Amino acid sequence: MTDDRVTRIREALDRVIDPEIHKPITELGMVDAVEVDENGAALIRVLLTIEGCPMRGRIEKDTAEAAATVPGLTEVRVETSAMTEEQRAELTRRLREGRRAIPFNEPGSLTRILAVSSGKGGVGKSSVTANLAAAMALDGLRVGVLDADIHGFSMTGMLGITDRPTKVGDLLMPPEAHGVKAMSIGMFVPQAQAVVWRGPKLHRAIEQFASDVYWGDLDVLLLDLPPGTGDVAISVAQLLPRAEMVVVTTPQPSAAGVAERVGSLAASVEQDIAGVVENMSWMELPDGSRSEVFGAGGGERVAQTLTDAIGHRVRVLGQVPLDPRLRQGADDGVPVVISAPESEAARVLREIASALAHRPRGLSGMKLPLSVG
Image (cartoon, rainbow, N blue to C red):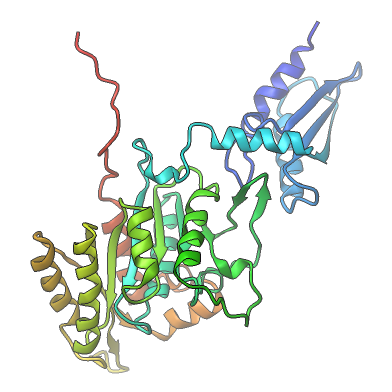
């Protein structure tokens, strides 16, 4: 006869969430055995996804604490071991179940995809991406960042990520920082090593990051695109056709003119534009006045040009001021929305993130369970 305490322990373990996959360990087949002896001592055997799992201590602690809530136990012991190849293959099958190659393209996907782009380098596109992601996570959203700037990757440093992805079967579990899951080629190559890839290989890298990474159910996926209108921008339009573009520019006319070309690419591939972010808009001086270091009006100029190109209004989502703390946060791996939330730059970035994230997730393409009575 099954001990009722065993059943209650298993029910309690439904609340233990794997830190990388973000699903209950019971659902993932990680609970190998639960035993309770005549003295009330419980032994729980947990299967970890890989040998030397970096989350082992946390899983053991969470498992022991959950089991200890069951009345009538005198002791709780947790033993861990690694899954066999067959068990890992079964876990991979469960995670992939019902998914096509790129889950964000499924008709039922509600993940909003935002491709952050710029006409040229040096306008702060990547720091804007990192801060938007962190701000959305602070608002309680499930957020991922795909570093699509293969040659100029920077997301690992800006988010302070030092861990490598965990491999489970043929799936990668993205590391997480500040509540943001991230994947970058920078997690696989030495710091000073250049990535010397051309079109087809770049396309395949983006495809793998979208399909072979277990992102889970994200509210928002941000892509940090390389500047310009090259191979990666075209690949993203092909691989993730639902992606909306966020164009980052500075106030100066030359930067705005280049940014307009990015919008023309979006129009040619029928990609929607979520809005324009004007970065480095002004610098606050000690006397409280503002110095427009790079001029003024670039964001509005880009928004108007894009409005004319795609046939509906494109807004300037916000003007982010020059602030040394924004640069410092990027260098330290702590976005300014976290490191200096009281700053004007952080306030503007959080407003932009809120404006983007709180547009409702679309139901386009979904099969709704309707019936006629």
